[in-house]
Length: 505
Image (cartoon, rainbow, N blue to C red):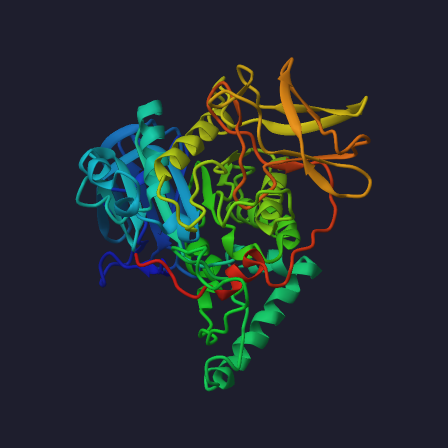
């Protein structure tokens, strides 16, 4: 979906991008608008009593910055050059870019309790941009809108009492490298090779597509709306190689969907992606912060807030501690919290072990909104779940400390703490006992008299119940950095590669 520059009038000298159109939301207090006109033409933009002026360059491009905008609306905005264009029903408020893969694309009409949610979606001051136009949020327009984006925007709108604009850019089955600016990929040797790999695979497709099914197995970074654990995923399933998708190649989605939005003023980003990179979690440690840095650099507005969803629980439960690529990808996501103005919504408790696309998007949106209130708006709240900070070992027990404990650590539902495992120097993990003591967690195991490492919720779909009293789950973690080993025929190592369908949206 390219957001190409769209002429409002074919005969007009002044032309605007599609995002500058009726029902739009401008980010306050400062908004940047742009377009084209005749070379050296004077262009004036006015909304209410505020206005800005620019002279188009030799290439006809102009940019205007509007200052001191106050939240509210509706307003009319005029853009005047040799012709005049009026933009109707403009609001000023908070604009968020909501981007990612299948779980960001997942629509409201597929979410839990969809009929009631759609019927209640009457928010004229929530506006959603997608498909080249702004829509006013009501039951007729919200159905196919991203559920995560909508629930996030709704909660934010109700909390802040201001208009909210949601710019939605999503594409199912895309890996993180598809969303990174080309210059950022080229600046890192370990990422630059991804372009060469893509070109090699794309170049082999004309020959590969002629081979009968079963003669070629091509690992694919793809997602599926549902994977049944009873299906034959215990061994690699040969599938015909799919035709390369230009938007899924390195920087493809960025070039098509993100670059055309720049420099439209935004408050921040909400991001939901990761499933397509689970075959190489360690590379994601570089990919994800590179993506964040590249977007912030492209906008040139400093470290705007960047909120993201940690991967939910998925795939069958393991009864014993084991290695997990999905857990390692979650770890890579959490490491991005080292960057300034970042926030993470943990979803380890609201996924679906049978499906990559869990339906409880309302809770995901709610947790993202809490993170925004803390990270983006400076509210004095605990906007995230407990995050591991340190471990001390003494007397055969580990004492684990956390940030974001809020009103204190608690066991959801009561009973003993679950999800902890402990290992000694032999790197063998065993289930461990755990209890909350003075807002720390004490971990021990009779099978590990000399512990060196602890893990929590380190599994595809773990049993875990550590929360803060604000009702937010603790993020999975491990204190070791040992290389993982997974059987080559495990459902986890083969499932992402064998998936070849996209959710119907």
